[in-house]
Image 1 (spheres, rainbow, N blue to C red):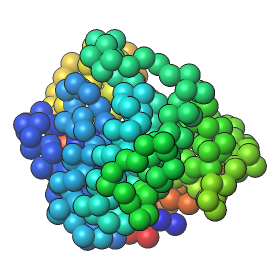
Image 2: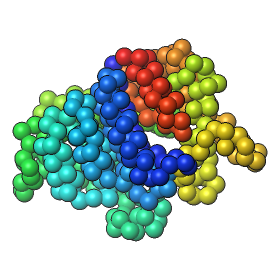
Image 3: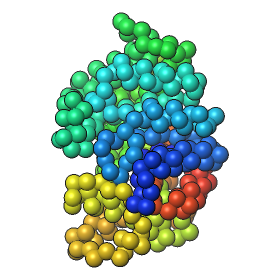
Image 4: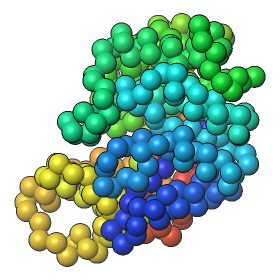
Length: 322
């Protein structure tokens, strides 16, 4: 079982947004030392709680601080970009860090209507999205009518963030999939992945691959791990109340708030759905999910306010999965 790390460059209430990017660089260096297979970053635009809107730029900086770990995007949101530009960016990364680059593609648009308007793109149909993914691959492989540069001896592999009809799209194009969030909670997840594998059409010898993105946080006890998960859960609760996804607050600051009954209920539901716990608890939970899905890789994506506690959790996740 391969284990990898996704970092969203989460901002914290007591740090600048520039510091959040520095924290991502430091986390990537530690991830390489701990033996993680990949370090991926995300794309979010004008979100107060996330500092990274340009995965390619951040990955270029991380590539200069690391030497072995694979680098990729979880993911580049293709409807926001032209396929040629995405291919050029990741071919450039491949040239700068040979043999270490992945390209994860997703469908999500901007967080709000004004962001989507500023990006100048609209929702793509399943067919349009599949066509643009195929176009990116043609540029990467050098089979398009135009030659994107720099030309790569081995093009970066593609992965698809499988939301909605993403599994069917990935199967038709012969791509590996990344599943996370609500997609993992449904009763039919095993059945849906079985269908993905049955429908898979190999591309140049590719095989079905399933990566699970889990917000893993590990501590001595389940209660301590829940405290680590609380800042992220609270940010999600606040986003539903205000429409803005905020920086992470400390657990102490959250406990000091006067919360409504609805907010408390949402926090409890969020904590119950989180992948936070002791080693023993998570070994059992993750094991059951891997058995159900036949996953090839875990993409750990936990975050919390306390950076020392997060680094210790990353160490424990590596030990648990490795």
